[in-house]
Amino acid sequence: MNTSIFKEYDIRAGYPEDINENTSYQIGKSYGSYIQEMFDKKKCVVGHDNRLSSPTLYESMIQGLLDSGCNVIDYGLITTPMHYFTRYKNNALGIMVTASHNPKDDNGFKFSFDDVANARGQMIYDFRDYTLKEKFLNGNGIREQRNIKEDYLNYMKNNVQMGQRKLKVVIDPGNGVTTTIMKECHQLFQNLDITYICDENDGTFPHHHPDPAVEENLEMLKEKVKEIKADIGIAYDGDGDRVGFIDELGNYVPADKILIIATRALINTFQNKMILYDVKCSKALEEEIIKLGGTPYMERTGTSYTEATTKQKNIPLGGEYSGHIFFNDRGPEICSGIYDGLRILEILSKTEKNFSELLKGINEYITTPEIKIPCSNDKKFKIVEQVKEYTKNKNYPFNDIDGVRISFDKGWALVRASNTGPNLILRFEATTTEELNKIEKEFTDLVTTLNQ
Image (cartoon, rainbow, N blue to C red; front, side):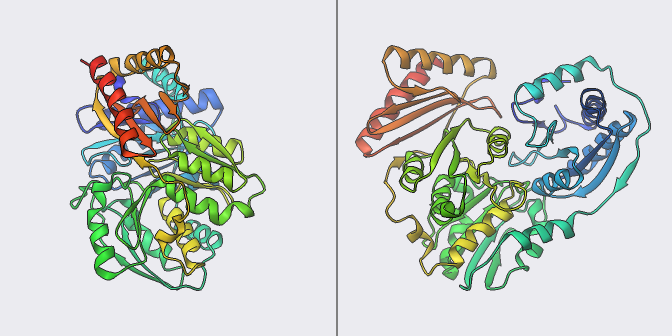
């Protein structure tokens, strides 16, 4: 087994080179043995996305679970948020076959060892070490098939409260697994006039890559919003836990600005006014939270971490730049792109303002998108440490919760190692183009030199 498939947040790699049916069986038998030995858990819930390799990987994983003596509650083809909901409903740990927003030929596993979020960091590396020893339990578990759809739809219906305004909406699920449930979710609410694009259930993702945090993947959505003069466009990722937005003018609205909109609309309803965001988010979000009487809380990137902190600290609203949004103020938080989209539609349905107008008055910054610089896995973390030393020598203020985020009077720079691939991630923000170019050049040149 290639140990590099064990990432910071999950198991993920190419199929069938590094993840195949044999790997899946081993992961299943290891996971079933592990939760029995370490947590005295005898059952788990399972599901899979719509990638072409998922059904066979799923069956081999289940067989491994059963052969460990673990009982399996089988929910079949579901979104990742639906899988999270099955964990909540059954008070059980679980494992989901999915590669999230990765390319169509990848696959993997998201899994849990506690009741707050997916496994993360050392949890995964401990499981990796256990798996490599191959000292698994043997048994004859029982497989039970169930359906979560009715409970999941009730969750949506009971936790979204639409206003009276009728909205024209374009939805782009990117041919991902949300195509199997989204229309039934949307039909629960009146006053939504929805046009769907890329809505065939197709795990080859034929129209575009299913990652709504990358603006170039949303060109079809932008054009359709402008064509039919919609109020808003919403996109989901491949497994349904990320969401992206387009305003009525066809402009991309990143997740940190969505958090500003949600904070403005909801903070007065929160008892705990702490709002969580990750290190990649704009300073404008922090400033808006403070202006509204809230407490900003910056966390490292990675939904396993941000979601865990949101729940552990009972934070009512959180999210990260990649498009994971956590509404933790009603019912259980399940990190659902469909639910997040509905909550933003709820906010829009209770105002006569255009979507773009909901961001009026925020402090304006010029920002770069995420910049990915290819860098080997064995080198990327060393470079981040070298950037930290450079920052210390320059006496720049910095935050090292996740990589290095360097603060300046008129902007900031971020250099961090990707936890999902052989890349360094850079992002920059400043009050002027001149200042942005200055900051970006300093740290891009530094990283380029260190990466030679």
